[in-house]
Length: 203
Image (cartoon, rainbow, N blue to C red; front, side):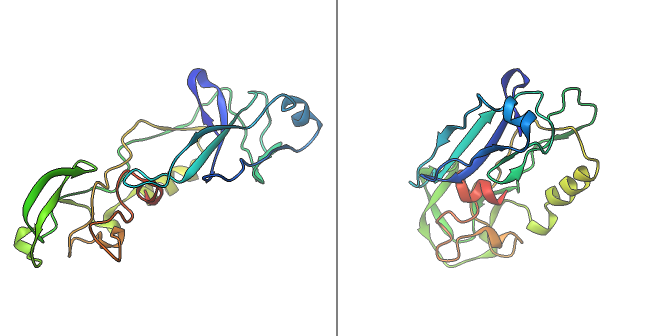
């Protein structure tokens, strides 16, 4: 459940592109009455065309504020209680894994063409650590999971993400500790990085 404009609670689900939206099912007489006029709509639908491939469908339903917790399911998952007067918040921001390559150690000359804001190589040479440039954060040093696990222990009423999610702008250079985000077949092709579904889902 997320809060939309004006604090309107929305149940959202992401499914594969072309798949039907999940069912919003009341669990009891009270929720059946509250949800009697609620419908599930398609909020957005992406494509599978690179470089900005999001082959998913986003579904949502506007929920009544009076809906009790665990009184309805969305796609078989119980919906949490909608907090009218939240008192405990978690604030997050700048959460993405930082990978911004300027040279993977294999480029002698760059083209003007950019992908996800990164110049693409026009002349590939054998790898040299002396050529490596850019910002690379090792995945073992990315603290988001441990921070969010700790935050979840506090059982907050509301989680607010203040912005800036995606920092995986390109592949990882050899020896930098983030190579597991790379495409195993072709490093130049999006793997678990970039402004696409794989990059966002991995984050």
